[in-house]
Amino acid sequence: MSPALLLVKSRSSASYPARTPSGRRSRVADRPPRADPGHHAGAVRSAQSGRPAGDAGLAERLLEVIDSGRRTATYKLAVLMALLDLCARRSGQDGRAPDVLHTRDIAAQVAALYWPQVIPYRQPGSGDAVDLRQITAPRAAIVRAVRTFRQAAEAEGATSLHLARQRLAGQYEEMLDQVEIIVTAQPLPRLQAVGTADKAFPFLYDLDWGPRETFTARRLRRHGPAGPVIRLLPGAGEELVRLAPLIRPLVEMHWTRMVAQINGVAQAELDLHRHLFGSGRLNPPKPLRDGLADLQQGRCFYCLRSLSRRPDADHFIPRVRCGIDTVENLVLADPACNNDKRDLLAAPPLVATWASRNTRHRDHLASLARAARWDTDPDGTLAVARSIYHHLPPGPTPFWLGFKRVEPANPADALTAITGP
Ligand SMILES: [Zn+2]
Image (cartoon, rainbow, N blue to C red; front, side, top):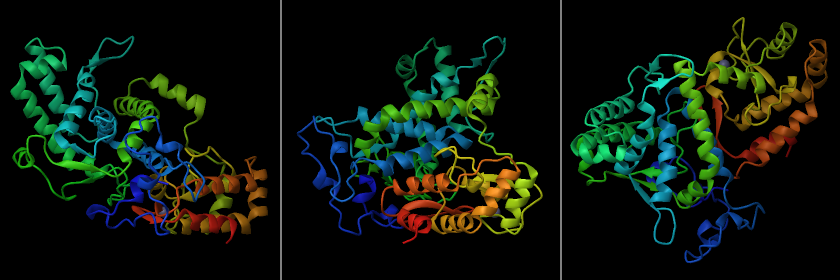
């Protein structure tokens, strides 16, 4: 269960129900006294669920941030990394994570992350050095600001960020203004959205400003020299510190892969990854596709619109959860739905449709698979789905319900759909 979601009911999370309708013991009560540094809240077991109190929900959501962050720009990854760092760096005398973080601090941390990355990259064995792009869109304000500052600093002989900050103090502050403006406008409000839906489901922090508010440098400074704050939800900072050793290498890996993809460098490594672990794209033979299309009456499994001639075969249980390619885990979807769903878990109503298809057409699916020499394992597929939904934290969890639709639902409803009440 997520402590972040347990206790908090705040203005920007008002649309997101608090997580304890059952009056479950709060995290604060579970928590050891602040003076006891040897204690880990994660070792405390929740009285009701019997599983560790720390924290499936937060880890779950962090993985979603990493997944969505790698798709369009590295900004979300940079902000997440900055939060991990700052929760440790700004810890109190007792070692506890801070309650608030200032946007100026976050901007400085983000700028420090990009500082080495704006150096032109020279591919091994190639003569040319290239400026790496960090974003698919043409405008990249953060990177441009850091790069411009770095070039100015190097012209003054300052090769480290530390020196650059001292020698070009005024320009450093101007660069931070630009980074802070972007960070408050985009990644900070967007980080907690799920999928491509706009609505944020806070699990790490609340913003001290409205989601549509935009800042100029002057308006930022009205909040003081350190800017406005984000308020970390109870327990969230602690969890970030604890999970940092797991999250950081994951972020670095996705970040690297994303930059490689955007810039078309390091193709060999991408090819090797594809060779070792597969591309994640499925290409079932035509008879199998046709059979599945018949079962879906020629409609997209998700939105029920008529399928094009070459629909995507989608892993209903996302491949990132468990690479299960059985016919029972395949559905046909139009590319719009498939790309929007990505690695998100489907909402209970979709799970119900999927489970009932697999039950009603169990023998037919198996014979389709046999004819197409494809894997079939109805029981194993069901077991995977059961296990995944069973291990989600109880209470409202954001699920994918359709194109640009993410809604909170109770994972238990999905389990009921799979196993019966
Ligand atoms: Zn669709």
